[in-house]
Amino acid sequence: MLVLLASIFVVHIATVIMLFVSTIANAWVVSDVGIISVGLWKNCTSANDCSHSLLYSSEDALKVVQAFMILSIIFSVISLVVFVFQLFTMEKGNRFFLSGATMLVCWLCILVGASTYTYHYANNSRGWYLESHHGYSFILTWICFCFSFIIGILYLVLRKK
Image (cartoon, rainbow, N blue to C red; front, side):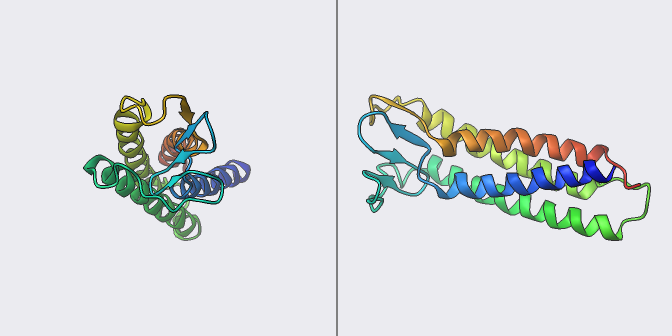
């Protein structure tokens, strides 16, 4: 049981770190031609020049993605703190309901943010970059989506022994 709790804790910390990286980094869409990448906050035209604003920075869809990705980080950190708190204060036999519920709220925030970005920007329907692919931030976000769901369900199922 201790190994299971420790492994869930490590995966939860990894998920928090990956959420930070995917939200902060400017690599949601990467151009195949040149060194151009687009993130949630800036448009990078070279490895050292990320001072350009996004062409669509005033759109509501981007603000929704930014807000929900920040909320997902907040809820993931809260879930981690609540899990550690419950680990030391909860009576034996109880389940980690609060940790699981908070992590599932994080999962929903990632779902809304990532799917909104996918629908509006990831399909390249606007033709900004004719040859482009999804960057590591976009992929990390969907990996965090899977991990947060698994962690949330495991928290709901687990009992303190």
